[in-house]
Length: 519
Ligand code: ADP
Ligand code: ZN
Image (cartoon, rainbow, N blue to C red; front, side):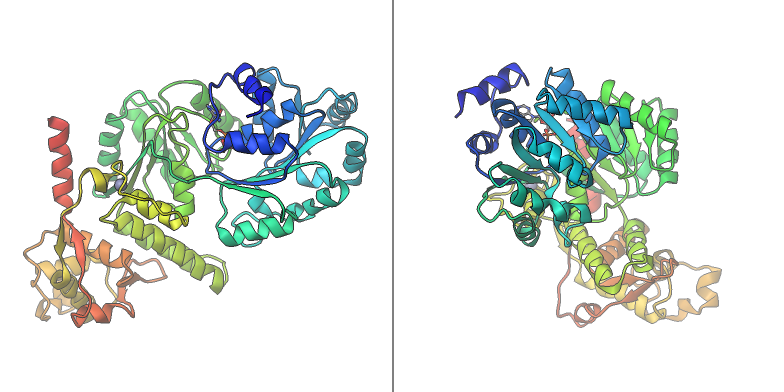
């Protein structure tokens, strides 16, 4: 290990040791090698180029797509006494000239630049007049058309290699499956770069999924177990963010709201309070979190389903960045599955995109309904094999008992079929339980063979059965938003008894949790 690098780590950043692959990456870059770094959010990517920037001669140029993020990083570095600045469209002409002057006077160790700015001839010429220590390309997946964040400006960055062939480059990203990784290498001409691929495992995060039954009560109970701790509660809609935050405040919890519909001043003031104060619960849409670097977030709760495993991983990854225990809690129910399917169906995306989105949602539902180790599933999704069950997720800690629900599933599917595939869960459960009401009689559903065949389960259990069937793709919701269910291609195999269905005992889980708490 380069002794200067360690010295800088201690003296400037105040950290005792490098984490994971950091040491190897820093060494490689200091020696002038190119690299591609794949490291999960919170893994510590910034130090990988910040330390070489301080050890090598000249100014490090950091390409970053997010203006807010640049500013945060520069502020943080300045506080540590590092000479850093940024160039982007948020600066006045005067301020830009000042930064350029500091660069020419060789005062800067790091300069953050927006890609479109970097590629302007004026900036390129400027860079040719000063010693550049390295180029860091943050969020490198933005160069990939198949990634979720494509930015055309990133395409031009291969020019760096042509124009500055002797200056080492490091490309960094937290999201890159193998095809995206390949595209990054190709687009940025990093064929000879060494690849550093870190595990995505966040062992200190405990994963926990609960079935929604009374979300507000469940959230309250969850927050009770995280009293006075900082955390984030994600909701799908702005309206729900506002309502949830208000309800929590009413309960005496220090909750703040954050979503893109709020005015800029309120948003940034809430964000600042969350970052600076202890024990604040931030209720937010996913607009919140990009670039939020708060080490002691102790929990991330989802009151609605995220859109994909990638989203879920990123959002939960904001917890426990300090390495201490954190909890990822997902509360979901049938309504969420239906809502998400409808959102996809009704979106403006083309057919191909919709197919991708549906596959992503299905993967997430598979995770939510899983009876085995959740971490294994999560890591498996990102192409990693986790050796053993983790011991730090709900299913490992409290293995769910499963039961053969094939017959019950057949009853549910028959009820859907016999009623013409145009009713929602409420009515279907009524049919199965043999409820006598006007709607039942007016449709003559009390005359059906399926009427009253499901009295052995209560309404809540039936609702769980339907949720499982929708999550497993054995039933699908209509696209118009009425919540009616219809059979799918795969339902037939269950109806014919060719596929067996296993479900978890849900009530049992809640009860056991309560017992553990009491003990
Ligand atoms: P990323 O960019 O990969 O999401 P960051 O670079 O923002 O991650 O780092 C995440 C957090 O981890 C930050 O709070 C950072 O200060 C901290 N960190 C990074 N490296 C170390 C280290 N070697 N020792 C202690 N803390 C570290
Ligand atoms: Zn596990």
